[in-house]
Image (cartoon, rainbow, N blue to C red):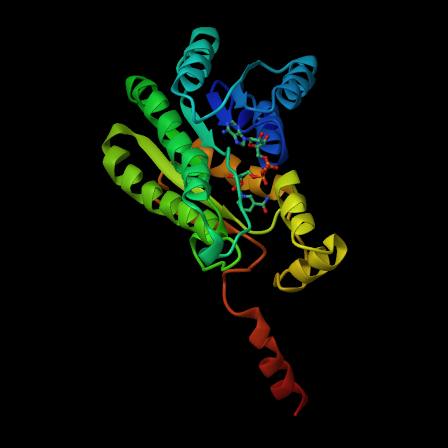
Length: 271
Ligand SMILES: NC(=O)c1ccc[n+]([C@@H]2O[C@H](COP(=O)([O-])OP(=O)(O)OC[C@H]3O[C@@H](n4cnc5c(N)ncnc54)[C@H](O)[C@@H]3O)[C@@H](O)[C@H]2O)c1
């Protein structure tokens, strides 16, 4: 099957599609033959994204807005369905992060993270699932994080919202399995996007943080947005038709084990 056939005929909604992983996912999904609805609060970035995709002949409809606003979600869902037909793939990608230790975290910080990362995802899912059920099924892919699988003391509530997404993925998958709606999530590691670059720059020396981050990844490099987009394409496509309730790490092996103990293996080999 060629790339242009993998999502042919599907109508997809992608949140947070103006930058980073969402932009890479929108670009790949358009090449895979999908008609795409996009929403992002970065109106300029979204307009550029939409014009690039439509200029390349793809079907795209972009609505500037926030996933935290029910009216914005309703608008992008209604308009996408009106233009292209029922949405049968949803990528809940919009997310925000915050680097702040547990003891310094405020209630406003928690509201901010929960508002976008969890409430936004719930709003979009609740708006789209009835269309999927009416169409006989669909696929939802959430962008969680490997911070939802292991602890991350410098981003404790970001991690807590992502662990919430991992849990919701499983509950939603079970609730909608008989409706033909599959629900999975990706747990990206460190991926080169404006979010990661911002986080590395905000906590000191960017170049040093980039090197240190790369060093603790077993595969030895920070990931690319495409690494996540390709995994999302698989889970969204009919190729994954028997997969639901899965949290898939795409992180160069970061959560596979404790890479720091690799010196033990090296010592035993040299003795
Ligand atoms: N980059 C990483 O290393 C990494 C790692 C793990 C998980 N993730 C997750 O992947 C997803 C995408 O991350 P990214 O690195 O591409 O981030 P990014 O900040 O580079 O891009 C996120 C996009 O979401 C949009 N957005 C933010 N809040 C929004 C809102 N309320 N409504 C609509 N749009 C909104 C932003 O405008 C932006 O275009 C996020 O959920 C993030 O938590 C990223």
